[in-house]
Length: 196
Image (cartoon, rainbow, N blue to C red; front, side):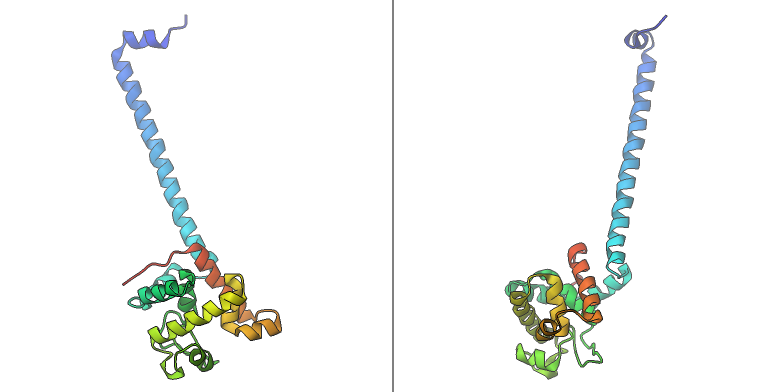
């Protein structure tokens, strides 16, 4: 003989309490597991975005820490010139966030500007290691490039190679391509963390 669930509950009220409690516990455990899985996926995705860009979390943290104290000035300068704020990653990757960085090609400072480019955009060559001066010149240069090139990737390649060199050659150098791939990946996947 089949017994009706409601009838069984009326006959044994303790069964109702026990059943509801067990269902609640099962639901809570399932909910906690779902939340835990979501958190793991988010953490893996965040780490994956950095790894996909070719940089570790430690390296990104080092960039943002080295640029502490000037990142707000850089972001403000980018905004004031109607340039995408995410171009802050260009300075971080070009110089490793170091004001005193010098390349074999003669590029100097946070934005790795050559003497001619720096001077052309308003920062004397001997002041390229000064963040404010080099940032203003770099942002003016990026702004000009953004009028000639439509994608951030092309702007970064042209920034690295020189706009006229990029147009003349018609393709990026390996160095410029790698830089553009890393910076655009960071621009699209990683939010800048201010450490003022």
